[in-house]
Amino acid sequence: MSFQQTGRRVQQRPKTVFMSLKSKLEMPGVSALLAPCTQHLDINQYARMLSGWRSMRQYHVYGFTRLGTVVAVMAVEEQAAGKGRLLVLSVDPRFRQRGMGRRLLVETFCSLKLEILSADTGEDTLGFYQRNHFEVSSSRDTRGGLLLYTCVLTKEALYAGYNHEYSSGAVLFCEKDGQRLYAVVTELSGNTGLPKGHVEPGESNEEAALREIYEETGIRATIVPGFEGELVYPQGRGMLKHFYYYLASFNPSQRFYTGDVVDAELLPYDRAMKKLSFMDVRLLLRRAEVFLSSGAFTQNP
Image (cartoon, rainbow, N blue to C red; front, side, top):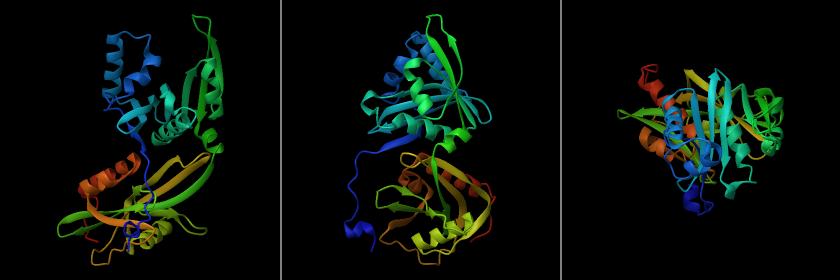
């Protein structure tokens, strides 16, 4: 019996979702969040800025959305591989003092796989950056007589400020009746992701991924070489979660199991993409689909 049948699903509040806004700058909430940071621009300059953010590869825009409205936004210019400059970080006043700015900062830093991020800030917001592990590298007077500080966040400083938790899992798939199917699992919290779990002492990341697949789906799978990596994201205050991921295939003649802890499903690519709760996991599934469709994996499981 799945947990959907037991009636133990937790009632969900509206979700706050982290996502890329690079092609979605027209979403409700974006202009209001950018207004305090762009009031010095006229309408044409503002339009050119947004056009550049959309079309130029060095610009990245991320944010949190809630009920279809953007409630926090952050823009970064990637100056070189692993090095970025923060352009804008703005949070809706209704959601301040909840750690949303910190979460957005860390999610964006990790999503871009940055090694270093610099930011210019005034005295009124300097404390925010210092609390979030930036170091002040320099200061200078502006034309208005105000001090402007340049702050720098390194990967080492960020990681040193957090505890760390490690898990491992995989994009699990099979080929059945000419169709590629992917496994997704929905937890009691209501979030849907990939089969994964904690890496146990003495266990390799690959071993942990295969064990978690079996525990959550009943499937004995095989790791597909050439596709692996790591996702890092905040998991509650003071914790960074490291997720090591792989690609794994299985013979569809096996019995696919769903139990009380997670609700597991086998879905075609489009439905699996819609079902997944988090942007970085959707991007991971997309990468896996491209990898498999490219012919990099040609043998049937």
